[in-house]
Amino acid sequence: MFDKILIANRGESACRVGATCRRLGLPAATVHSSAERAALHVRLIGESIEIGGPAASQSYLDGEAIIAAARAVGAEAIHPGIGFLSEDAGFARAVEAAGLVFIGPTPETLERFADKRAAKAEAREAGIPTLDGGADGSAEVAEVAAIVRGQELPVLLKAAAGGGGRGLRIVTTLDDLEQEIESAIREANGAFGRGDLMVERYLDQARHIEVQIAGDGSGRVIHLFERECSLQRRYQKVVEEAPAPDLEPGMRQAITAAACALGERAAYRGVGTVEFLVAGFDWYFLEVNPRLQVEHPVTEMICGLDLVREMIRVASGAPLGFTQDEIRFHGHAIECRINAEHPETFMPSPGRVGDYHAPGGLGVRVDSGLYSGYSVPPHYDSMIAKLIAHGTNRNECLMRLRRALGEYVIDGLNTTIPLHQRLVEVADFVNGDYDIHWLEHFVEEERRRRKE
Image 1 (cartoon, rainbow, N blue to C red):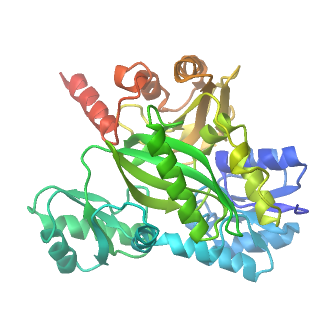
Image 2: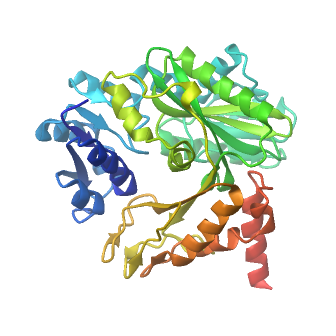
């Protein structure tokens, strides 16, 4: 194990990694921007270096400043947390060049899966089903338009370098095609620094299922079952659960085996997810996210494991602390992402937290960076907390989630808690009968009713 690590993140992500360090008795320090001197992760972790201005580009995305902070505090390794530089191969390589350890996949693995076209080609080579298209890509409008016209509609324009819904467009008609492509290229360039798009077949009704994997870097990779991530708005996940409701056992076995096979090909180190689209009895590779995911707590709840602990162990040279045969899941877990947004308009709502009360009790977990009096800054992602419930079955999990949502108090700013309270009462969600478009339709129907 390391003598000390630096946690290069903020908010609930930094608090989450810090909690594991405290459980391990592992000394840790962190970083903060000038806007977050009073942030909870700074207070809880105790030692923090201010690395720049409020904007992420001036602080949490400044790799040189983070490495300098690690040296200043005497850290041997850097944990990037969730988001920011966690998938940046250049940063991981710079960390290693500085004589430090990057707690995550190797730079080579990060590069291997960063390009969606390359990742898709690798999945095909491994015999994993993929959607038609996506082999060719371009940042030239005319070339992308020619690819679209050569395929049957609908198709999906997808940024080859990105994720999180940026650079994505559904093309159902050739009307205004060039304008749609220009918009997607512009968005991809702004988000990822490169605008090349890939074009692939679009599935109108599908579920988003991802498999959690863990590897020791030697080629040994195991899975920790799957998560359902289909409740999305504008391609951003809103609710996740594990295991996926009513997933046929044969399909579970097939997609978890495929995920492990892909990880083994890359001699995967640390934790990550292999993502799939499921349509009826068919399933297709989507992408690899080579990092810790926001939704990892639902896997921890059903498997009784600490994934951050495993990341730190493996990065320090230790083997995984468990074998595939030892992994079992127990019960059901659901996570609600709590955002500082208006629950109906989804407009950002930064501001000062008034009264704050996090729910607790059997089977309830809250990961957050909030406290009464804290000012949520406007400079970062709007997610401010995650509420996770676990039960012996999905019905018990839902009962605990309803109670916890009703007890969660975050005064002083708008949050999406009321949206989650409505969702957990809707029959389709209660029955686990939804796909990747269900939430968009639900939100639009609510908007229409408010206007009537």
